[in-house]
Length: 350
Figure 1 (cartoon, rainbow, N blue to C red):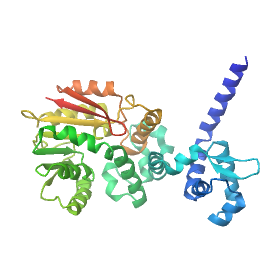
Figure 2 (cartoon, rainbow, N blue to C red):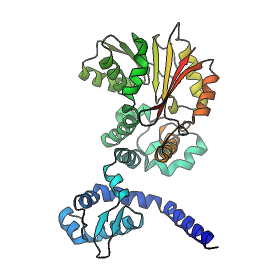
Figure 3 (spheres, helix red, strand yellow):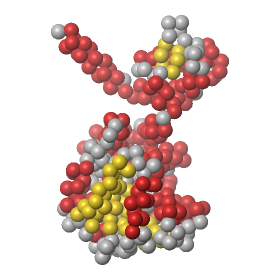
């Protein structure tokens, strides 16, 4: 009986954390951005509200409301003498890069738009995107986003891909491809990494004109404009085939599309695959993760796609994704797991 009662009390407590979720999130952001968490990190013995007020120029009133809730949710700990210390959870909010990137992404890119989630699901469109600008998808507006929003978007996107580059490069260049087609090349980071890895490779980036404009700037700065070319193609409505190459590369690209769109894109790509050409697809499958924090982050990212990005895509599970590949006449030749933080790399053949 007591076990059931405790279980019910715990469940009710968890329900309140959900009910006050937006408050908890904004208080956590404020504790971080006002420097309160960092102050407690530097003063490991604890600090009083008055000490923090003098050091941080935040009112006693503001400190009290933030710290009192911070104590309730386990971000800080209030001692018997009234002083506060940083908890382990607070440490991760302050110092863990994955947490920082995720938090900035939700705060700067998604927070206001998430109010339109139900509307987005009903309409199959990213109704929250209007909080950032007037575009059909976020990709069409990336280069025109507010600087802070843009920085947080790219930091989020790159965090989950950059760490995988060293391992992925070893796989991709086993057979020394001479021409690599980077579909969805974004800012050109992968193309630049390829050119640094192999002095003989040429890369063609296929993407929307706006993304290619940003990629051009980075590639010129890196000094690879003679080895990286560009092909503006909207893969949702391609008016021409993608260029032929030894390797076609798609990293965190197909999760930006619905199931039907993925099948159409793969069928279009397969038309350019000749001879020993290989397609490499790198994705973060939510059901192929070692740690719960990664699975949670990926499931939450699906809601971003619904509300802010395009209204119809998601982070896919591996089995459902493999079923889509089977519909295209392509087959998986090899699979590489645990690439970087959370990626799976699929080697696909026609």
